[in-house]
Length: 387
Image (cartoon, rainbow, N blue to C red; front, side, top):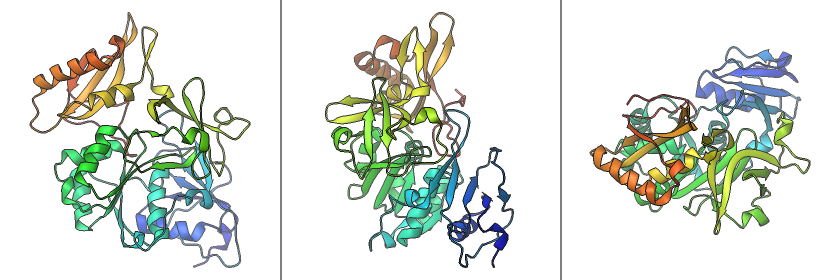
């Protein structure tokens, strides 16, 4: 059916189900000037934007627009905002080959978020199959993956750790594993490499604000230091004096906050990184630093160290208010099945004393049954866990 009143208009697209979402994705691109992928939160919309409240599919006749796709940021590091991308930038990382058409991708992200849209477009444009595994706990996700013979999975490191905790991940026959949205630490990359020695394992750096960044496929944490000079796939990198990582993508997103963009077209990722030998390693988000008596502690850096101790499955490090020091470091941990937490805690403390400064060492280790992840699949850093 044709809906001429939508031609050349800005449209709000609420998510109902994956099938309707993909139909609208195909129909509205090139037909509307802008499409806003409405998240579950009540994010204000610019005027005028027409609501698409039912499964209406617009069929372009002679109309062709350079459609901007507006995706909402998650709001984990500030007020949610709309960032606009065009299909050329959204699809620049799509890989097409005869082998890729045989894949069945598991969609573990919400499709109206940047990471989820990437999985949808990869499967759609490469001719691969797609299984919706975006809802339910890790066990339900694994059941669906097995049911539909999934061979490719894209998920956050937090979600991969939850899948590992089930003890059933090795039942899948995976040929492609992708990690994104959070820091991919060496411990996790090594575990997945052991389980799937012949699979293609890559961790992707991308964000709603910066768009598609880059993929690392050598099974090592961070990315090659030489990319700071040479760039990769048309993307340039820069580390400033405050350890912020800046990127200059081939396509500049629309509606970026001015403070995030410099005169040369570089975007401040607001991620902190450090040059270490031949690698650039991520430290965490600039807004997540814990201040202990004037000393800066990167929670993700401490988490990665704690995860090196065998028997530790998941970790959340955060700051707790202190009248003397401003904040103290605290860690919530999930133990592997069968691990004895008293012995583990002694190992953790010994490991910390060897590798951390005193102010970085958690003052308390809380053993919890599970850690909460948000709808994006990332660790919920504002959640309080039951001890």
